[in-house]
Image (cartoon, rainbow, N blue to C red; front, side, top):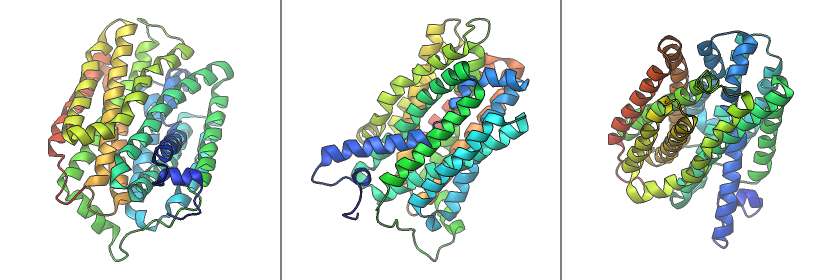
Length: 406
């Protein structure tokens, strides 16, 4: 790396003379970048019942519109996977976050559900581009010794955005109205662009890979890699389960048994707090126990939370949500780091394919489990979540690194 890098950039690639300070600063920058990139991805779930009343639609229709951002996330992940080698990492991340503020602000004045849905897709396109390029940047700039910790820090920022974003969304919408909620998040998107502008300033050019290979050839290489294929499918299952849990539980919590108000619903998402603490440990645990045992343990923990979601006790439901959050985020952190190690070339493309599968899983979870919830109720929805976690556990049997991978 260049000797003219800023201190925040140096944190992304720590200087050997000050490893402790460099590691801490790197973790903070990576985590904050992730937080500001995806802070409004799931924040809107905290105001789902309010939006459902505002647009006068069914829970399934509103849930699909809110989670339509995952459609954009998946599409952008595929595009980045195709053109990863041609995209300058820093410039791509910066432009994506600046443009993201536009559809976020326009959500404040969306006149109908169709417009709302289109704007959420546009948000997803921008967020996923920034997210995927940052993962590629970390894979390319961090050594094997620090890559697992770097990915865990990035996923931790994602976890924090789930907690803080939902609380902010619920509080602002409850006190100042829906419009100001979206204006605030547009400001946070721009703050992310400012952070990227300064933290990545002066970095050396990122190698974009061999010039002679087509993107389709690179895709074929990734898809012929059994551990990568399994990880792509696991990502699908993880977000399928996560979306199913944290979308439709909102309607349960504002219903007859619990009757929570919007601000109280926002406070429920303190259940993500344990995940903020545990997720950074994923890289270290995977390094000591191996990837497969780490996955199985994380998914088992999430599965233990599912029966608690069916009890008519708020304390039990909160405990169940906390277990699902810890387990799915831990598994996601392990999966993200594994992709970078399992890919035999063009890690940016591999990250794009993984995230495309991950977010397609979220969209499928919203669509499929939304219909299950409307037709059969919360119990059947929880059963579908359990099936997704069980399938992910079976797929984890194939997570073996290819020979020569580090």
